[in-house]
Length: 300
Length: 229
Picture 1 (cartoon, rainbow over the protein chains, first blue to last red):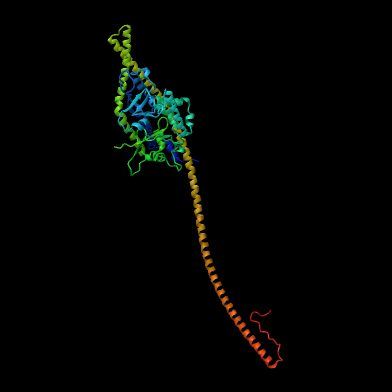
Picture 2: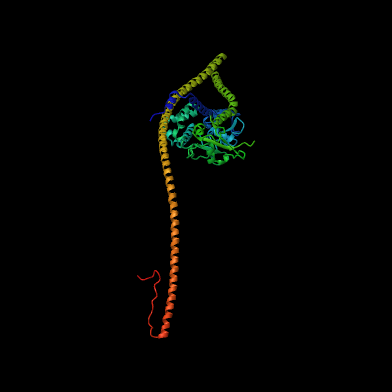
């Protein structure tokens, strides 16, 4: 069987219009990845008023990376407040916002979107060194715990996307590269490895299942997580709207009623017609999960 | 670009404009100043410690020079870190370039495969079109035959109707014939009965008159069609 001439000619000469469009599209997508990675939240850390100090503790200001974890990026905060505290008064550090203990194992951006997205900036977090809320938070004695949590999330996500084939094919040093990329805030280092986790066979049109979690502020459930494919059985592309219709239909407002909820990912509200596969590839956190917050819409 | 993608990009830009940009300048400056302050504080502690020990007090110029030296060392350290980071990025970019080449090669192979498949499909399509044309012709011939057969069937049906009509006429005539025959037969029976009656009367009369001619019985004739064979 022969290959058509038009095709070989196109390969040889490369249609400049087509190539330019593709390169531009890829560049645009990479910009999205960069914007997601370098998203920052200006934060002011204040020591809890009942903590015993030798002198008054000044607030500490920091730009927190949205994609990282609180306990991973707050070494300076800890160091700053330890200067004014006695060693015997110091227990495990934990953070709280307006009475809600902040789960360190959730990405920072997700915590902000869930609890403080419609408040004024900088985000004011209270720092505690006593009375650790055992019922609400996991202990985080060292960065190894964060690494273990992060790697377990990545493995879970890859089990959903590729039946764990990609993560199992990686070497120990590749796993380390993913972690070090996140720990040291190195976009290129992280994505050099993470892109392998974002690949899929062209003929399948997407991942096996989309790794996602839907968080509801007004529910006792921590989050919704079910199996959901990026392509419907009849070959149609599933969108964010399709996912919400299936998992939490109340999040989608009818045409004749006012909007009750905001659907937020990385501090933005994507359109409901956005394909889920694209969202998973570009707006997932480094743990490879798409963390979706459903929060009450502001009333004003 | 698709509208949903433009929307995401615009929203991310807007998010950074409202959340990050107004604060990043002042936060970064504060961070740098804090770092510098920590450095100077460490230096000051060191100076205080040495002067308490009486190892020889430094002049103001010496202090200034030493502070400058420490700050330069700090900057050098940061710069070497940046160089190291950039080297790493360079390696990563090189690896990415190789990866891109491999992707290009993969997509090229895929494209060639698709083109071959398309070619096969085109040939199959042509074959199907040819078969369809043949079938269409065959269908036309069969339709013509069917039309002829339909016409013949119509003629046969008409003839059958005619035959049926004729058969009904024949049946009607036959029925009339039978009726006529029955009437004749009835008349014949009636006439025979009357004749018999008359004969019996006539036979009784001579007996009454003569008394010598009794015992003769006359048999009546058979009706038409009932004659013994």
